[in-house]
Length: 154
Length: 212
Image (cartoon, rainbow over all chains, first blue to last red; front, side, top):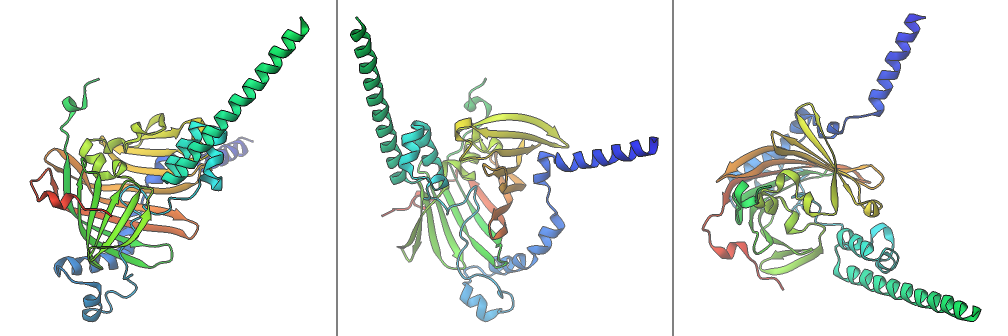
């Protein structure tokens, strides 16, 4: 019985450990594997740095086996903090006007930060204005109806 | 609370030699080498690429302009802005928290795991449908890593700041390892910086570029 209880305890602990991963796990990196993967690129980098001004085409003619598989276009710059590409799409595929109309200034902020597109932000702003005006009209109608009902009862 | 000016020196410009080594999800590889210039008063990040082709890239506002032989080759929309680049953050001494204090993100929790201090930043509840949490780790008061999550909790990408240098009192990373997840798979990138110069009296023209 004691053995069964211990086995169950160990199993539960192992399962809990698996489910509740530590936040720091995401920062663990297998350095040896990364260094191995980048070994060829390191060689190419050393060559480029030791031959100042060398172009891809020159390198290809001088050392074709070294550049095998290397892209001729400069990097798409996914680095330096965040992606340079991929902006300009409406957040969650929802039109920016709707973001502004439904969520007001929060919607404008979402469009501004996610799409990072002035035109889209402008549409979200118009949406916010229309949403605000619609709210005002509804409020005025509601007030008129309430006031009318109140005066009508006298 | 002491003002920043008392806590640390502020810097205004920097330049460096850079290299970006990338292994894409489709296994193709890429190397980009050149020099980068940034002046936080001008707010244009200028990459003068020398390999594989001579090109100049200018990041300004929410656009990246790519010039070849002085002519615009391409202009793309960017989700990166100069104020959140490592250059701007490092010059302002804000790299240790990645400038998150000045965003709609709020610090949710701080804990210590092994030698790392882990800070979890979450967006305002009303923004949580569009933004996921950001986990930031520090090692000996310097940023060690940052992980970006999607609103559904899946990891979007992570960066590890592997090496640092200290120039004129300014901390700057010299090697950043980045992993980016996409539907095609994971791409890996190592960005390196050498010959870092802070507040040097270079030709001011190097830090600006006339845009169309």
